[in-house]
Length: 73
Image (cartoon, rainbow, N blue to C red):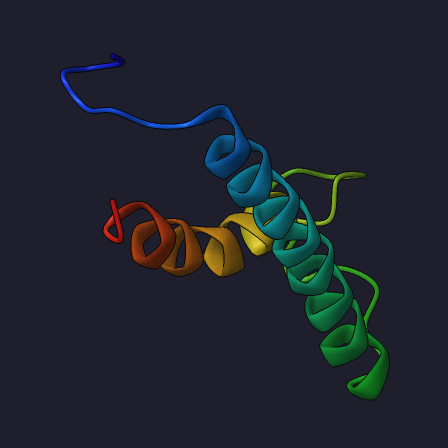
């Protein structure tokens, strides 16, 4: 029992693998958008770090997938 739900370890491993792949896809998608537009960073808010969107690009892909996978419990 974890947070009053019965979650198997196999499902946790499955969700973890899917979300790690989704994070990489989100990063690759943001990089391809930047390459297509010939820009290095999305903003100059954090110099040397690529801006805020570069910090959260993988989370933008992970969040909806995590919601869908975790609502299947």
